[in-house]
Image (cartoon, rainbow, N blue to C red):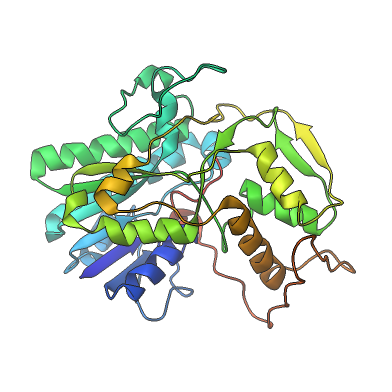
Length: 347
């Protein structure tokens, strides 16, 4: 199957492309700068805001994973108009280009942040795990980032109802792992720890996520091409409930001398909801298999092999063998803003 991947040079996109190729699919990477794309894939420099170019790029494809988008919630907070253009108009362009070229299905990278708009969820209030059928109250959407993802999901439903274009919505938990963007919280924690700086925790640190290792997440994308996932919404959450403080402590296991400091909470931050993974298990036969501690270990090892440390300091993290230094050369590629993988933010 010929499959296109928008944002195929971003954090999640690169892993998805690799897994699709390993599964025997032909892959067409669409991004603003495709120099770092997997050389085994077809590569086209395309902006998702350029509808004519996007339409040409999707010709002959049977499915498209739409992963490109504004994924940094702090940037989204500072630039809501640009975020709306990229996440909503960009998704509309992908849908329209797919419709014009006869692409069979659009598989869209959404987020568990949308569950913040579901009823309930007060601090200390017990609740059953939310499913993909959970009611969404628009007045609870909160962050503009969440609103753009809800709007994009609505567009996919509308294109199916109006034009018959099939979709699959993949609501990511918090992806992490080798190649993640430097501004993500776990990446910041490791970078700070490696250079002797404290780990800064926003608010009380009780806000939690179910982190999902990027290799597990990419595997779910390959499985989502199964016809059983057509016109379905699937939450792809990790199995472990991890607070920001838990994450800081996981990093400190490898850098025992680092300190933890608290800073003011971010506006509109998603504090986490219990989300069921049963749909992914039933439709895709998928559950994540990488534990958070093991995923952090793999990321720390990757970081030490690919990222420079402070002058004169070569850390030997506790609980890890010293990671070998990588040969000179570029680190795993980071995408430009419009190619950033839509689920790669720490939210």
